[in-house]
Image 1 (cartoon, rainbow, N blue to C red):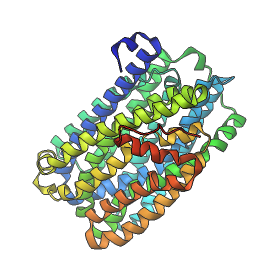
Image 2: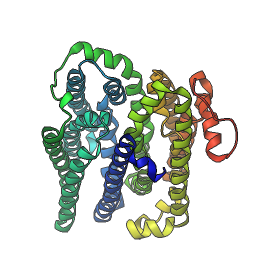
Image 3: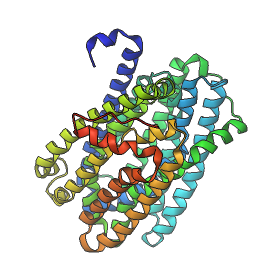
Image 4: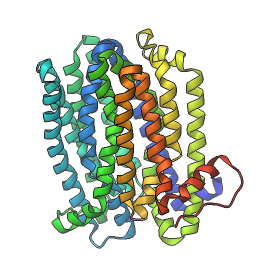
Length: 438
């Protein structure tokens, strides 16, 4: 982006917002990787695998508490909703209510899945569920996103992140067990809720401050968002189920090896979704006012992010043995064998980073539902086929094929997404007529 454009207040605000969210997300991912590696070394491969399997089962339900409403709410706030306080207040109430319900579902799922292993898995599930309930406070961020001020809540989340990391390192020094680290997760969520409440009280946009819950608004939002909610739930199935199936079918050691490799995948793709969230208001304005300009912007952003991500993929592939040994230790050396498949999955993700945003703007969230369902079916089937034979490596292979099918090949099934095939090609070709959305 030329420096002269930074004199434009809109461009400058978007740039600051993207930079702040990128720094916050990158810091969160790096700290999470290093702290998780320290916890993994402390617990050992087998216990680390069990810990991550229970965490993945809890995450499978808990992160779906968003109900798919985030992009719909931000889109309507940007478009000039008649009563933004009611819209935001309803969204926050819905997020909190769904978090409480899904917390109960999470605890029940852990109790059923690990009933033969004593009370410890149940306690872990309760603590993870509690931590996710506190994290429902992140719905406050929707108001900041709508006015492109995501850097404000990002600061609050970084404060809670630093304190949470400090607590976990202290627990390692004390020689604590799995329950203590689950308590640290819950405490970090509580601190995040307090920090976000303070930044909203101090910096919240005045036009969104009068929160009010309204059933009609909630039903209207859900009518649009439910396909995204179901699609996200399916997506979580093929993101989280692999660790759970590995622990059940091959034991904690294979799950621990897989979890170590997956942390590098999280690093690679972790910053990209937040960049997408930060740019969503800008994409929404372009889509509304200039469809051809939106198509050019979508293609250009996709190209930049794909090539940036591929650079990280290649570097990490070449150094995979040294990086795994340095961060996790020799006990996790087998993770370097699994890592290439996770890197290939990340490369697929980069090229589809704005796909969900486009389908939201086009009011075609139902496509996300069907493609995610296809991906979930493919993933579960491949995991059941490959895990008994290849263990962690087989599960990572299943993840790669799933990403390829769900994010790219299924684009050919729907008229609204066929132009995305051309966008994918133009990411790597410097010529050709620019693709244009319908």
